[in-house]
Amino acid sequence: MKPSRLSAFPLVAGALCTLLGLTVLIGWYTRNLVLIHIVPSFVGMAYNTALGFLLGGVSLAAAALGQRRVSLLATLFAVVIGLPTLAEYFTGLDFRLDEMLMSAYTRAGVTQMGRMAFDTALCFTLLGLACLRLNLPEGRGGRSLTVGMLGALIAGLGTIALFGYVTGITAAYAWGQLTRMAVHTASGFILMGLGSVALAWTEEREEPKGETKAGAPRWLAGLVGIAAATATLCLWQALIVQEQAQTVFMARIAARAGVETQELPQTAGLLTDGSLAAGLLLAALLAGAVWLAQTARRQSAALGRARDELETRVQKRTAELAEANRALRDVLLSVTDGKLRLCDTPEQLPPALGPQHVPIPLSRQDVKTLRHHVRQVACEAGLGKDRSGDLETAVGEAGMNAVMHGLDGVGAVYASDHGTVQVWVTDQGGGINMEHLPRATLERGYTTSGTLGHGFWLMLNTVDRVWLLTGATGTTVVLEQDPIAPTPAWLRSVAA
Amino acid sequence: MDIIEAPFEVSSQTSAQGAIVSISGDLDLVTITPLGERIKEAAGQSAGGFTLDLQGVEYIDSAGLALLVKTHKRLETGGRSVTIVVRPGSQPDRVLTLGRFGSLLNLSHESAAGVA
Image (cartoon, rainbow over all chains, first blue to last red; front, side):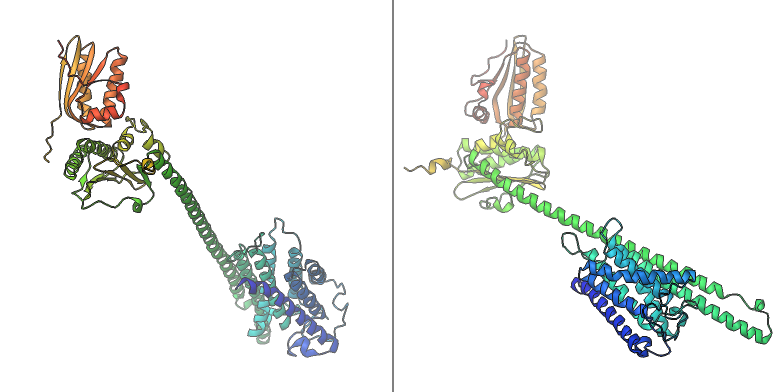
């Protein structure tokens, strides 16, 4: 159900209950038995019950509209009429409340003149408590939990009574020999109970900041358990009554037949007690299953939130690092006279110059092989002895870094038509820590591995251009040497 | 171009007046370990000046530079003078000059004299 529909339901339920109470009250004042009984053979709705629905409906609707004070006033009647009537049933006293406002003139199904049914009084008491709790501050008791569960009890009692009318099991709406709950009373309590549950549900879903939470409330397991247990208890009570009736019936037959009652088989209690135990067990299992499902869902949601938060943090951190890298890249480029280009992605590396020579896997011994290969390519490309030697020096350092700090290093040599020689040295190691990178590339003698720390310094002082791409999956160094040393960037901008 | 690769070789002359260790080939990550041992051996068998003749060295990397610096520091601490002879225009000469190692090490372009 969408939140808007869910929040509208208590209002509609309250309005319908008010209308129900008003209609029956009109029936009482106009002596219209159809409005009081619906069907002549059914029990009628007591005057106090009709008044209770009128005010209870107003209370629920007012609570749904946020009119807490009106709701509280209207609720008082439900408590005032429900609780003493219950006391009358338990103590056998007569507080003369039943005909205080209207003299009862119809007795159909009513064991006590004008008195509402026991379960009706119970429902009004529960409704009163629910509305009272609803209008008290949140506190530690869990307002929505209390209201939701009381609402479920009310709806459960109403459902059982209505079930009795539908199936013809009188005992479901007539507890023992007490006054029976009327069919429209049962319907009204279903509405009222569900309205209270919906109200509590809506309140549970609304966060203090005005945001709406998705999913069922935390007390759904309790709600399901109580509803199932209520239904079980009601049916158990009905079974007992049914059994008593059968026992009386059999006793009469036995008396006619001249058989002693003690001689009759005593098996009836087993079925009812078994039904009660099975029903309560089922209710507990159902509640447990719902609780487990909810816990799993909450944990899944918490994990999802943690994942989202982590992703957000990673994205934020990545953006921060990219920004820091951009600044670092600019600084490195500037202080090396445009020689060292720090790359974030492989796309920022230069294009390969010409066809590739056979790549050389790097080991301690094969760094020398790569150097000699570079020397040969540089000679063929037309680089002079010094520039070729300088490139070899740089390649030796890049190759040694790949062997010492990387994994599965490979060297590859390219040459352009213009005589520029390009050497790629890649490895699959853990990369250079960004914290160390500025000092590792710029500071002569900086080392984290006990070496002389001259590798990058030598590279930057012997070749024309160096590209560096480093990360957790490896490092790529690209070295380029032109036949003639290029004019420094600062000199190119000076007018002739 | 065919590259003629000089093999890595070390020879040493030691006496009470000093020692000369002559090296040919490449001075890199692979060769520094055996060379380091030969230097220690020659230093232990001699006193006075100590000369590292790199005229036959075609290539030196930062690992080789590290060995030179460490040797220099160790022997100088022991009161011995260390001279490093390089061939002018060679890659070791270029790297040592580029790194201004002349201010730290006693570099020479002169051929080492024999040790009597």
